[in-house]
Length: 263
Picture 1 (cartoon, helix red, strand yellow):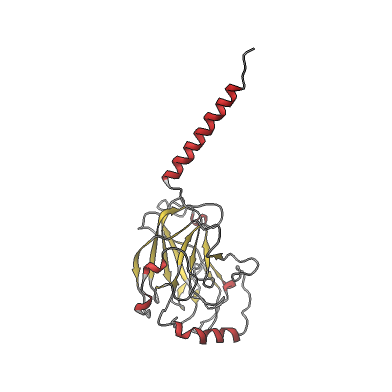
Picture 2: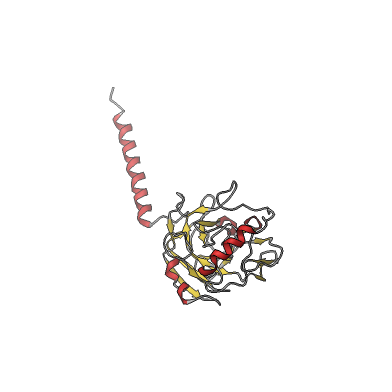
């Protein structure tokens, strides 16, 4: 949404009736949240490139700078690339994302409050051609206007679940084995697709997805960044690790030999 509307939206959000809690993780800062802070110590890298930026409707030229999605999340309302209604972008990485323990990457949007949420599907690819979407669920029961609110506890598997400065995490284990074309140990592409929040887009179960609609100016999903939590080690790092292990093994054998004294 255009920044000029933020103050009005904030006032309305603060005076709106509280949402009923759903079954999924709550907002950032609350017990049980899965939100990843932009300065979280588990982050080891960020998106370094982009391709296939397909601009949707209702996004001004001001917000059409895809390079703003590269590097670390800024966590404000302005340093973003707008996808527009129904738009999309694919992020690339110097080091591929790999499936490690727990979450493997996180997507950051710029919602200014815990309930001012614009949502997106997330897909990944190993080869840049075949993409596979994370399962998702939206339990928001009815349409939400441009000044309404979305309860994050009703959302799962959708980017944009958390306010600016906090990323929505994704675990590649959820896609393990879905296709021989996807290697969850080497993910080089993350695609974010805006969801038009009027109910025409569906979750994995076929239920309508509602979020703030209609929006304009920077309509649709506003991407801040994509963080890497588990990355494939660089070749140099692998070589250095092998050298270190070999050196340690040689030193150990020398110590054993020196400890054997002739009778």
